[in-house]
Structure formats: C-alpha cells, structure tokens
Amino acid sequence: MTDAKPLDSDDDDAMTDTPSPPSPEEIGLFAFQVWNYKQGEMVSLLIHLGDRLGLYRAMRDAGPLTAAQLAERTGLHERWLLEWLRGQGAAGLLTWHDDDHFELTDAAAAVLADEHSSLFFAAGAFGTPAAPDFVDDLADAFRTGLGLPYDRQGPAGAHRTERMLGPWTRIALVPRILPALDGVEAKLDAGGVVADVGCGAGLAVIALAERFPRSHIHGYDISRHAIERAQQLVADAKVANVTLHLAGADTLPTEATFDLVLTLDCLHDMTKPTETVAAIRRSIRPDGTWLVKDIRCAPRAKDNLANPMAAMMYGFSIASCMSSALSEPGGAGLGTLGLHPELLEQLCAEAGFSQFRIHDFDEPANLYYEVRI
Ligand SMILES: C[S@@+](CC[C@H](N)C(=O)[O-])C[C@H]1O[C@@H](n2cnc3c(N)ncnc32)[C@H](O)[C@@H]1O
Image (cartoon, rainbow, N blue to C red; front, top):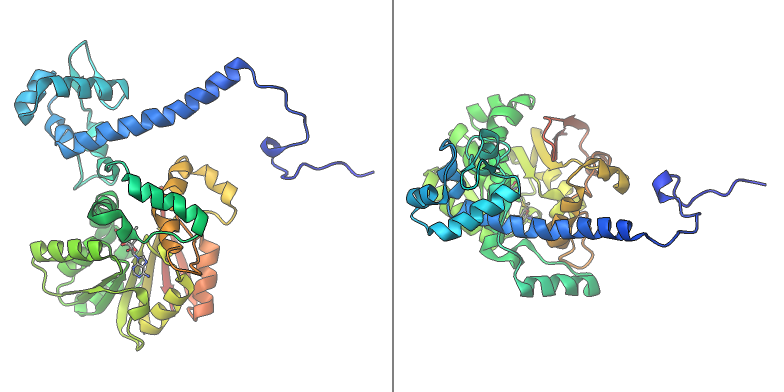
C-alpha cells in the first residue's frame, strides 16, 4: 500500500485533515488581517494628500512640529492638519512625541519626501483611488477576458507610473546600470542610436539624451497620455536629440538601427512579447545591446511569496500589467510577476539572441538583463 500524498507537497497546503470549525479568536485574527488592508487604503489616502499638499516636504529637517506650526509653513488649515498628523502618527509614519508634536524622521523623509535623491522614495506611488467606472471595466474584464490598456487609466495613470518608477530611472539608470553593460557607454559617447520601447513619460529618454548628447534617443509608447507627458518633459529639459513615437514595439525599424534598446518594466505588459522580442532582434545592430529591466519573479508562482510585496504586485497586475497584456484578443497576459528569467532567456534564444546575462543590482523589485546577438 502506498502512502496517501497531499495535493501539493508543501505542508501548509495539506488538505487531508478534516478541518475543525474556526474558533472566535481565529475569526477575530482573520478579520483583523482583512481590516488591516482597509486601514492601508485609508492610510494610502493620507499619504497621497501628504505628498500632494507638500506636507512631508514641509516637515523634512524641521524637527517636531505642532499642527499650528505646520499650518504656518504650508498656509493650510490647522484643524485639517491636526487630524492628518494624528493619522500619520497612528500609522507610525510620523513620530508622535507628546500630545501635539509630530516629526518626520530622516528615514521617513527618504521614503516620503526625497524624490530626487532617494531610491527608496515611495510617496509618489500613492495616487487617488481608482475611478468607479474603471473598476466596473476591470470587473467586466473578468467576464470577457479582455483587459484594459494603460490609457484607460487616464493622464493620472501615466502620472502615477512616472512618479512611482521615476526615481529608479533618474537615480540608477545612468550612474549605476549603464556602466555595467559591456561597451555601451563608449558607443553612446561617440554617438549612437537608442530606442526606449515602452518609454512611458520619457524619463529614461531624457536621462540618456542629457548624458549622451552625441547620441539620438527614440522613445516608443502606445499610451497617448504617456507620450504627451514625455513631450512636455522633453521640452522642459530642452534636449534636442530625442524623437518620441506614439507607436508600439511592432513599428520598430526592420533594419539593424539601434546600438542600444531598452525595455524598462514593460515587456510583461505587452500583449505580444514574443513578437516584440523578434522586432527588437531585427532592429538592433549586430554589436548592439538590449537592456531589459523587469520584475524579479520566479517560474513557480508560489515562490513569489518570498517577496513581502507579492500581494501588492498581484494587485498591480490586475489593475495594470496583466490587464494591459490582455488588452487585445490573444494577448499573452504575462502580468507583473509573469516574466521570470528562464522565460525571458527562452524568448531571447528563440528570437536569435545568443548572449544573455543577468544583472542583480540588489533592487528589491527588479532584475536587469543584458542581451546581445
Ligand atoms: C509600467 S510602464 C513603464 C514605463 C517606463 N518604461 C518606465 O520605466 O517608467 C509600461 C509602459 O509600457 C507601455 N506599453 C505597453 N505595451 C506596449 C507596446 N506594445 N509597445 C510600446 N509600449 C507599450 C505602456 O503604455 C506603458 O507606458
């Protein structure tokens, strides 16, 4: 006789025992876990308001402040600020010193106030709640199977993506990531042609255009809102060596054109990643480099639980990434945690790339790949 095996050999998945009814304590703890997410929703709203109204920036380096002092610094109403300060103190985001003094510590400032020099900046990721009609469409997607492209989130969606991903692009791409790629800086210093496919608001395009004035940088994106924002930022930055295309990866030139192609945090969003990889392979010069930044994830979905933010990642996937990747019939639907290193290596090999190198820069969310012919 053979031993009966659970469906999944993980202990926590064993389904062989008859469950006993839950105790009130167990139900209470579970309810607390669920309400904690509701608490997160409300704290998120207060973080959004704190970022939007400049409250964190006003508190940076200021030491303990009362609501009256914060009102003086910001010109906002004291009673509203007092409730906000108490809420942020209760959430542990501000240090609540005595009954009426609140402080933004240096660590908190790096995450909530320091957009331009902290890789940990996060306040910009906290947008307004999703509009009810957008949520209606998401619910419909569960019925039809067809997802929503990024533009369905309106200009605010493009802005949120820009604020959430921008610090990594501005701070890490040029100083940290590019120098690790074989021969890329020298080529672009001499003058090369670059494509950023899925360029969003164009932050990488601008960073490259500024650092490599002899090179020409093309940004491609299918999102009208993202490209409009990129046009504005390119104009503000006064960089002339840039061309933006409101167009997808399928419109890349069919002849070998680019010395460097970038796909930053977007291949898993695309409906046709296999075709995109093939288009990039055709458009890249024989000695060119393709830099992929994609989300750190594992071939076996349950192994993604090693990421303490996995639940948030699956939320992003349904709201944005998988939805975008299913926004055409037959879309691949990879989603936020769907493009793991083994799959990408396979796609690259099938398209005719022969060099595949993984770079781990200790960014909690991302892995980078250097791909060459
Ligand atoms: C998460 S955003 C990343 C934007 C930018 N690369 C960054 O790092 O900030 C993904 C972007 O991919 C774009 N996208 C999705 N499918 C695309 C396609 N087939 N061709 C070009 N862009 C695409 C979306 O419109 C969106 O702007």
